[in-house]
Image 1 (cartoon, rainbow, N blue to C red):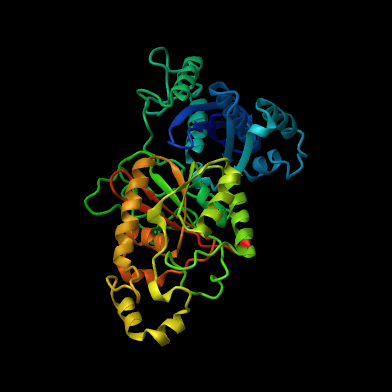
Image 2: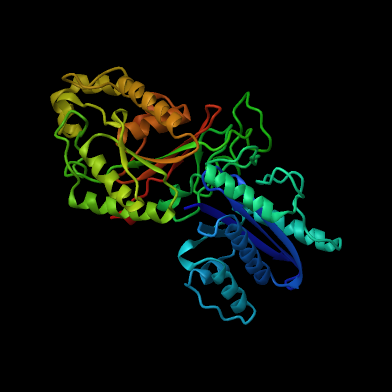
Length: 446
């Protein structure tokens, strides 16, 4: 079954005043624009224009695939809450519009999400183009630069041919000749479950931490790396959809609250009752987002149990990746940090001082873990280019992936805190850059 994202907006210059709407249908995996709609509607209010934008976006999605599931994203809290059924519709002008929107597609196929205005720029631009056209006495038409799927021949406004081309592309698993936008896809939407906010994936040419609103430290967007060509402030050249790894640390085991070393050389504990609750909670949260396309797990039991809880909700299989296992802590397995310091003080200090030092008794150094995790990363990014993949793994592999993406030194591993069942993410782009999102909030999972 196809899945689309519809972003819609409407505006009125006067409220009421000259009004227009804009709507865009996006492929959630690639970020490609599948269809655009815009119209000048005369004198109306903002809310009327927003509802009309919603209706136009839903109809455009229906033209592409009547059986598609649709995730509507709008910056109108009113429309989102009313269409979600959480707010009553009292205004007489809104009731018929809401009823019309509800009839476009079956209710079960449509979900709604509020996003900040700055993340609805595409639809907002179309609405303003429609109002500008109305001011000139004309109706809106797609601009020549609009990146849309189109039929190989025929006039630009031939919606039926455009829809047919998209349906053919969907059926064939791709679209020959389709052009891509220079805006990165929303492949990181699944990453916002811990904050309850919308999440924007990082862009090519960036490397660093992105806050929950999609901005980077020091300003509204991260600076491009030296030597990278930027097409706009904080944006690098379009590298297509990244391979996005949603990094999930397994749920608690009996050893987790005691902060004992628990690696791949120990007893391979199962999830505790608290850990199972955490796994079920994060599974529900990720299922609600609906953006994870594959589930990959460490071979250790606690990860496989956590991964299976998520996979069961998503209807996906679990693939095991040996490279995602936790560090082998040798003779330190099952001990607390204090116990290791008491029994093996010299070995512990060497381990803290150098990534090449291994735990006592044939354990695995962080340098060895880095080589193993890097190899797994390369395999997975190749196998899942352009997809959003859940990796269920452990503290050290997750910290290593984040460290490598940031270009941070090995000692940074000791400066990260990673809670059980917490989420982080790294998006890997074709130019070798990566963007990191750290959520690490499990308060809602307990």
